[in-house]
Image 1 (cartoon, rainbow, N blue to C red):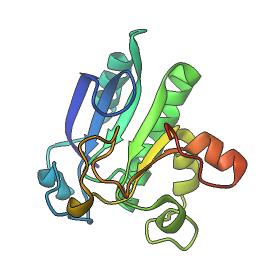
Image 2 (tube, rainbow, N blue to C red):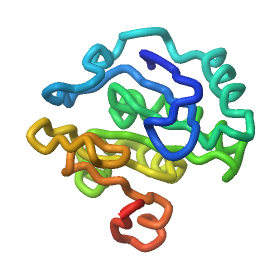
Image 3 (cartoon, one colour):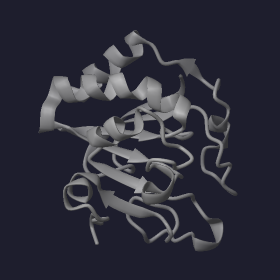
Image 4 (spheres, rainbow, N blue to C red):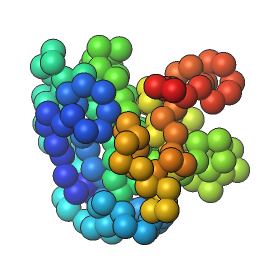
Length: 174
């Protein structure tokens, strides 16, 4: 897996001060995507153990609320395989002291379920490590700059922990 950028002290992509990882590779190609260079799966730099170590270090201060995964597309099957051991490491290191947000253009209850177009042997475990998932493609005609943590009104901010426990979509913030 490659990544396009890592931001420390990000306040735009989830609640609180966060570390954000922009993974490379996306097949959605949304019109007016804010990060089209990351569509290429080989954009940026390789995601190595040293990069993981640096992110863990960035996550360490008490004022950092958590990690956010963006893209590109973190839930592309190729990226799921690389992200799973990393997210396990984040959870092993910090437990519930840091939360994990993920942004995906895939639809949680359509594309990320068994037989969904982005479902792999890693999907369920990966999703079990993500606390909040913002799902759905960015749709230019539904763009709304007044929305919190999303760009278009079709996107949902899902509390994945509650959703998985209750067996139905539970929105966060709504």
